[in-house]
Picture 1 (cartoon, rainbow over the protein chains, first blue to last red):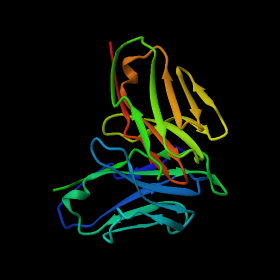
Picture 2 (cartoon, helix red, strand yellow):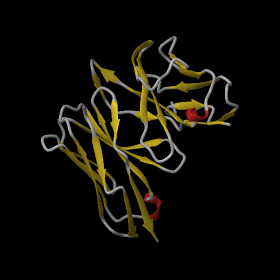
Picture 3 (cartoon, rainbow over the protein chains, first blue to last red):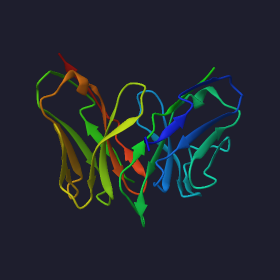
Picture 4 (cartoon, each protein chain N blue to C red):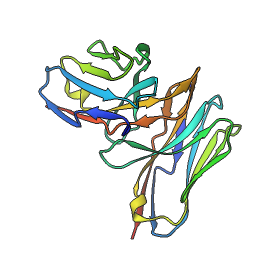
Length: 116
Length: 109
């Protein structure tokens, strides 16, 4: 296992188009997180999954955003009708948990989205 | 509401210096605290993880301490090198991660 993988690394899209990103977490990690980072800022929480269940969703995530983790393994983040303000780095992280406790997060390299 | 603050926001030092990055958080109810490194345009690389029951962790030239009662953590970098130049993020785990704004470090040859 080589860590958390994200695909694609870069995506340029026209405003109004839909885009989908994929994240493959470390195989034994049951939690998976999505964050968004804009230039010069720290990452902002979007949503997270415990296995296949989506447990929390940030108010930052408008109804144009949807995330899934259908089999509790990989996850997809879809943005519909993209806007220029969606341009950012989208980071995925995974962590192993026992009960409510996390034991450290591993981040992927991110997907950089540019909406033109 | 948990807030994480990092000081300084930016730091420039000559190669070889020892340096300390500071992180403070407002709520001591945390599971753990993690220091990450981020290079420009890249993802986050984990440096050190300190569980809430621990006081410090060490890895190579890096040492991180945690004082939950005072809401503080420090990252100590010994004998800094130009390759250490990056943004360092302090991240508190409360069930989800709360990020500081980072300290951008430049180590000059």
